[in-house]
Image (cartoon, rainbow, N blue to C red; front, side, top):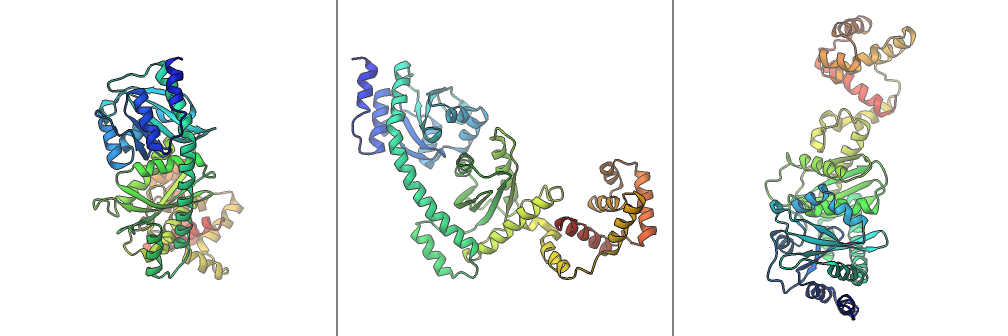
Length: 416
């Protein structure tokens, strides 16, 4: 009997748990072994290893592959190769992130990745037989991980239902919320924010997996709960340390959007937005409303709100819904300068209305406005003079400027 067949038979015995399987793989390969789920969270590791490397040690301590490691492996395309192949892949050491030589293989159910086996080559290097044993080991672990995922999904579905009720039910009693957290054995965060990431296409299982992987590995933010509703990925986030202030929160949202977009083969648009940092969990519905307002407005006003990620950064846009409601109720009340310029442009084949809107959007900066309109600054100045002659507006008056600016934004929302 060949060495491979002999060791292969040792993987076909009836194991009672994942720990036994991982220890057996380590024994057969004479190497430390780590088993992770599809989001790179540690499931278990071989127990009798004397030697290891810093990346594995940190993984064991934090129960999660370090963010710097997953980020580098993504950038080098290694995770993508693992996700697309059922064969072992050799990974050379990356010393600056504490990663030694490794061989890894994905554990799969058809095209679905259930997890990964990582073998650290310290005192022993895997040969062809070792690769064959590792491939067999992935098959042995497949059924264990299917059961593991089923249990995880039941827990996640329960959490998502609870989270969704929290977001959509106002005036909740604090004691009821505390009771719900206790039943799920989840600690109520001392500080929290609701964040929403809106995808331009329906969120796939693979995108969900990648998103959760990134968030679990983040050193600054803890994901307490999440919920997916077709295009929206809604999260309850809690800062991991006091250095994460309200001012830093939008930068984290931007980093998450940017880092996730880099991982996609095809371009995909993701809009992110978050609420204030709250300390009272009974105000979670208020936090949800704030985050939802941000992403809704960013969809309509993409150019105006490109750099906005936090609710408090919206400025006057926070009050647009109130103004729009009033505008709808008082349909007869229209803005005279805008109505007049609309009719004038149509009759005279001019574009004075667009000129005024761009001028206001650039806060009266002639050079910026003329560049956007593709005209000479002198032409822009002439048009603005003509607008004043026709309408009598005093666009240098802050009250008038703000009023006209908001009128244009309301028209955009209403599709005019």
